[in-house]
Length: 491
Ligand code: XUL
Ligand code: CO
Image (cartoon, rainbow, N blue to C red):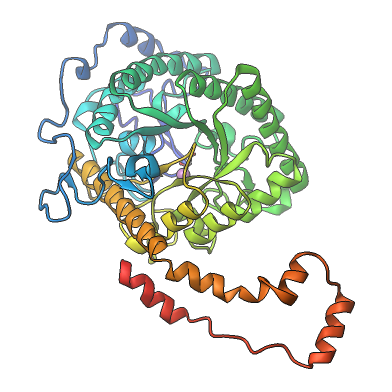
């Protein structure tokens, strides 16, 4: 879609490219067309001082959010997230490794496919292009710092605008990377992962690594190369691939096998380049079944694992799972995390939730304690987050237009995960759930079951045993309702 409104900056030459404005990714392209001259960027870059440099705070009424305990009635406090509190031998901060995302938090403006932006941020007034990008950096870090966020995540084109050429885009990114570095040093906030936005620009309409256009593949490779360099320069703990358009709209025009091979080749090139520059961060692939494409190749955890195994990529990539993507795939987040955990590939999570009554990726902040309990139960079971964390790939509702809503949203999500962590730890300490599951499989711990697991039996030997017995031992109750009640003792 091309929206010729030039809604920001008033230069009249901006155009807005958006796949779906509600997503909140930065998509503004200055200069409208590669061939359109755009002197404005260069000159304003030199002379414009964004207002953020003279204002000490954009949220003077928001204090540093502190833990005040469950009885507090202060909406700008944590009721459950107490970073220093020790749970199962680690602090909550160490377990949860919370992360705030650049794209929704500071670039999101509440637009959806039926309407334009609703949240007009005061720090953005009159700014566009690289000036806007510069102005957003300190505001983002003020939010993150006040929330006590240890990590953040970004796409290259969220933090810096699209240039008219790759070279210009890279220059913009370098400019902003320097500011991000300054803010990281000032605040101690670290980069959880970086990523490249390979789905907004029209060149990616058919995909990036899976485009039928070889030069689109090449452009995407160049973009990821740069994004890896920037992530490395910022000390990123990881790098994520979400294949926004790595899929198809119709199979009539698609060579699926070739596209999958190209995607694998692309990921191998990324792994090779990371080695070349000494980037030791963890690579992730983020499953999502659809949206924007009808079918995305990395559709769910199982499909990703199969792809990674088939193309010898499993040693290099883990999964970054997102709740709303899981539900779009017809799974629960608990299921997706279990699938990844069982394969030793549970890397990180994008924490959010969908809406049962809406069919798309609503990216809402997670507030459901059952959800967070399930997430933390699986995370603890598989050893917790090490390189990854709980990354709020979530956005405030279109109607939540005040900057303070960004605080309420994250506070709610962090408290929900802190409760999930405490409840999960309590369920584990209690032991009845684990004991039940262990007992349920006890026929495998000795005798015939142990013999099968040890590989000592065959169809023939098992037939002999069952012909002698005539019938299998009676099955026991699965006790689902009993277990649901048991979980409710803790929630
Ligand atoms: C899209 C999504 C992305 C990835 C990073 O639904 O979740 O923001 O997390 O590209
Ligand atoms: Co995500």
